[in-house]
Length: 76
Image (cartoon, rainbow, N blue to C red; front, side, top):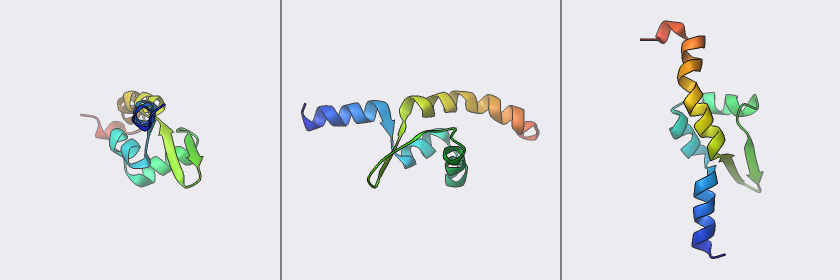
């Protein structure tokens, strides 16, 4: 496989920490809390940390319902 193909695979299946935070639209503190509580799986190889794209997207789709459930005072 060529390097470009490998990068496409990485982009298709994984997100960096900042990309995951931006996708979920949460603070760093909230994101790291999700990781610590094993709500999001962290993949680490050396100093590189990645997160499964499908897991972040699933969490994003559930996020609205979770916010309504745990923060009903913010619902509009």
